[in-house]
Image 1 (spheres, rainbow, N blue to C red):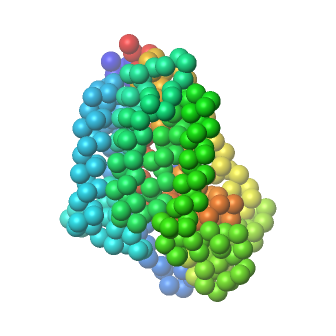
Image 2: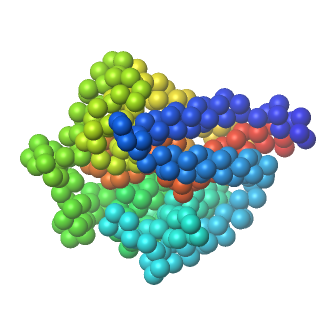
Image 3: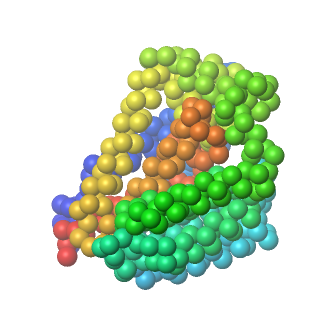
Length: 366
């Protein structure tokens, strides 16, 4: 059994994940250091600790047959719903939204684990209920309700950025499962109308301001548009080859806000330039392509949908983070996988990688 595991282990996925984690640590060290001051490197050591814990969690998931999550996934989903409920009553408020739970000296963000929980239950539903003609609206009521439960709980905590991923995961996995054309058009109309109503009546003033600033950041360069303008300056000033490691002026002179979390990419782009940015994107593309191949070659539908869910989770994080800091879409404040500082998100991403490794390995073992 041990020999089969080593023979069928997806080493390319393993090494590209470790490469992104190493790049993340190197870049985070620079983001947390300041010229002549040393910086706040405690967060660097915390992130290293989260990586170590995440690797052990990932390897544990590799040794556990992923098909067990066909049943255990429902219990995990219920567990994270309970955590989301606890957040609303005893959670900590960070950056204006209540989304954190204190666990001893650490804090966790249950919404990150809720994304994995949703992937489990959606993968189970679509694999257990195949429809060759495509899913109609009635067929999607149950998975839509499963999606709305964590979505509403996260929205109640005022965490708009994290809440976006639940409908995105549902939409991606449902599209792969195949939605009827009429149903798809109906959903698009509802999304358009719902978006308009949400902007008018549901979004808070600062959230509306983010959309307005996305359209014209120069309208308020010292306040609302400051983050985006500094991000663009940092990315552009890196030019082709960058200013050199630990030499990014926008970062070191503290012009770039939230540089260890939401704006971690501008730190890399300023110091490593276009070459470094393309190298990072190349690693992500290879990671996503590898995950898609695992989904396509999975031996049974549950594994395929599980892999699609993990790949879509990584893709949407990458798309929303980079799109926001580059001014292509409104800023929402989501982490860049394996590069942004964050304990819970790191564990969730590595759980996803563990599931991908598991699905790939076991297609050769049964």
